[in-house]
Amino acid sequence: MSWQEHLPAMILAIPLLGAFATPLFSLGGKTLRNVWMVSISFITMIVAFLIWRTVTVNGVLVYVMGAETATLALPSGMAYPVRIILEIDAFSAFMALAGSIASFAGAMYSIHFMDRFSGLSRFTSLYFLQTAGMLGMMVTGDLFNFFVFLEISSVASFGLVAFWRDRPESVEASFKYMLVSQLSAMMVLIAIGSLYGRYNALNMAGIASMLHLGVVEKLVLAFLVVALAMKCGAFPMHMWMPDAYAEAPAGVTCLLVAVSQASLYGLMRVCYTLYGTTMGSSFVPWVIIVLGMASMFFGVSMAVVQHEVKRLMGYHSISQVGYILLALGVGLLSLGNPQTMADYGFMAMKGGIYHIFNYTMYKGLLFLTAGSLYYATGTRDLDKLGGLARRMPYTTFMFVIAAAAISGLPPFNGFVSKLLIYESTFALHPFLAVAALVTSVLTLASFVKVFQTAFLGPEKKCYASVSEVPASMLMGMALLTIVILGLSLFPSWVLSNLVEPAAKALVDQSGYIGAIMGGGL
Image (cartoon, rainbow, N blue to C red; front, top):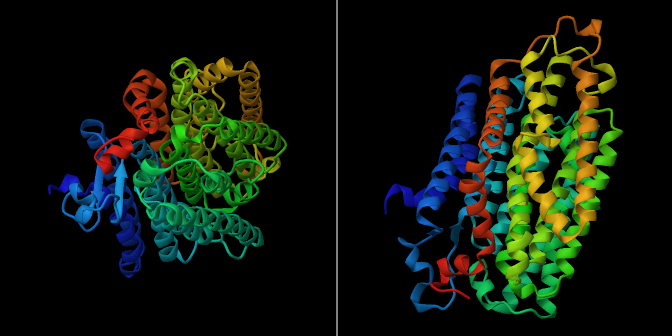
């Protein structure tokens, strides 16, 4: 086997190595630990990029643990795979690339942001475990290992959200996140156990090739949809998100955004790959649409009235997840109907998948800029901020880029993905598109409030000595800014080379199954 064939294993092994070797490197001092953190995050991002390139050229990438080649996925003539398999199609590679970029940006940013605090060896180890769990959810082809990686990312997140354990708010936010995560994990485990008892298999492709809709399968689908919607922060299961995002260190919040999208990836994989046209009824798609609409309305309504900048952005995360759920539900309605898939279904999926990447980039950048405000001033209260554009010009510029993108202003990347969602939802029902447009208007209004309050207006005397944040923090923000500008300046290339292959791979259930089983449905 060439080294390229080991890329799926490398994308998990590298952050795991980073996590367990961090205590050793920390013995060499702060500088060595920081170099280790940035290096491992950078290598992980490069591996994710190489995987995306490989999948783009060669198709679905299959890696079998305990076998030299992918052809041994079915050992000893067995009908269904029993080995642990990593299966990466264009959608998985797309998600892993977005997550690894967010992880690298957060790592660079955290070098100086966390420099004032102790316990950074534990912080770095947990950060790498969180990254490994997130990426594992995106590349595994096995349901039980999806659960394992879900738990790894969750447990690491608990520690990172409560990293400032002297703050009661941080401990409360972590406890709230832990309760929601463990309830979600139990539901996922019950669902996986039910499928295993039914089909004697854990591999997603293997189960999908056998699955027929019965009472057990309907209950499993309900459990998985509720559990994964809870983990990605959909209303009314959102209660953990504003607290966790507000209390976690800014670099961690940037990564938490990508971790929540890993749960959304799992929801999409379950709906399209595991069930697909077997789902039959339009009930589940409409449930997802309603969840998306409620998340959009509630998230943006609560964000508008917030005075704490990271909490405001946390509520906006709920509304942005709502856009993606709305697109997912509209896309699911068109499954099995070639006409509606051609009319608006595939457009909805492209819009939703594109919005995942956009959301990860601009929301991560917004949280980093909020962290910079806190680093420079010691407060996140908008009522206490003002006139910082003169003191922090680079942070101000990058905040404006991210705010314009999340608000869907042309020609930024958020406008492109939202336009696809508007058009596809309007084709299904005009009310859906109108609600999405109103949400964007309110999003713009709330970020104009943040810009006016924190960056413009008279300069507060207490901030006369404030200066721009350190270079490593600016570099972390600049990485996400460059990605946002690239997505904005070359939308046609992004749609053709990133988004469309990912959307086609997601809806191609037979192709995902065939990569393991050697045939279609």
